[in-house]
Image 1 (cartoon, rainbow, N blue to C red):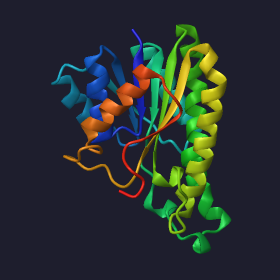
Image 2: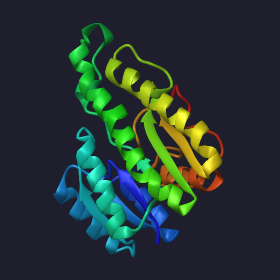
Image 3: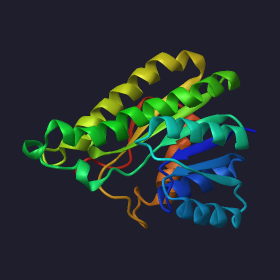
Image 4: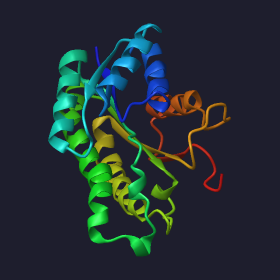
Length: 221
């Protein structure tokens, strides 16, 4: 059995993706900082018939994140699908003229070092399977930089470039890399940005394997 690993799992999008992939027979590895929240998510998913395990990790600690993904594969099988979707800290979104070089350390750790560590950890398993999917989930500043959100604008641009490079390089190996840009907030009940709707979009990106960047909604929404 292979699994989907959701980095930055929470009760909204992460849980919805776990349910969607779980319906397709995937075991689910949930990675987040809070062990208590992970236990709650695992218990809730178990009640819905989804096989899930929680693995505490901070995406700003690359070695710990890699170790948690190794534990995920050891417990649930090779990671066939990696979703990288942690929610950025509010401090990452300072105005550009108020942003110094030290203010960019956190965003870069979060959106560059974390994804690189995660991908490098799961890639050998995907190659062993002969298939795999990497899904990056970002806000609108990944596509259009915002002067009041300099940290995410800069770091998401770097994450996007990394993902696009992977998309081009790994496609011949049967490993699909894609990005979902979600403008604004995830909104329960929204026609396009409800967690379950977004989970269906991400499942479709994994299934259909078409192109790199996808948009959950219009950028001006």
